[in-house]
Length: 271
Image (cartoon, rainbow, N blue to C red; front, side, top):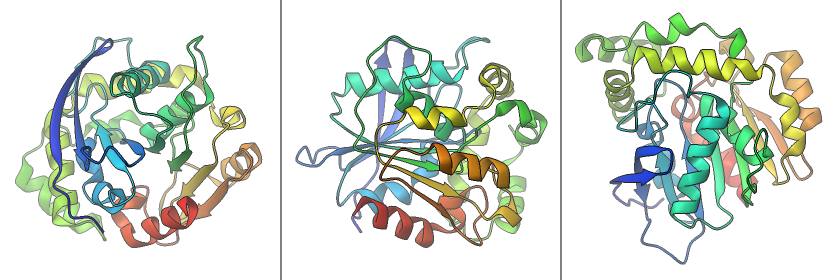
């Protein structure tokens, strides 16, 4: 595993001012990877995954709109097409050629829309592969109050609670989540549920993705975005050369709760 330090950046895109982290960005001989986090998280969600991939990729982890140190955009601008356009603008600005695309939860939903080319006339980027980690597939079924209850709470309270309820998380994982909860706004979270919810069920969009796709599900007994019916449907829609893997013992934050197992599945797929 590469022990590269993370580097913090601010970039002005056509859709606003965004913050991102990178690992190994100076390695221009390597292909690129773009990582998209889940709701109420930030680019710091990837503090272990970024270095874990940096021996093979230049890693870019974006703070999505309303989150981290990125633009706090206006109500009505949190649709999955808006967040996909942010990622598209980022790919264009940094001239990322055929990147690997990785998305968790909300970021996974954004990745599905981006890679499928849904609801846009813009050219769809070519991705080397797509990895969807417990992607959110229907925001109409979500519970926004669950995601807003910890926003802005004292860090010392959150630290104790997250440590107690999140087996497998490292100190860095916990610190990153607390930082994200201090920076995200309640309006942004409610905006995501309201605007992204208009899309309804997005699983059929998987059929429009052309890149080989890895679909990772959390342990169904521990809470996943993909119930049995959705899991079976998703597998039917996946493009050729794709895989669907459940990681036993993993919670919804698969890459934080079962990091080693997650990376094993990812590495097997990418090889």
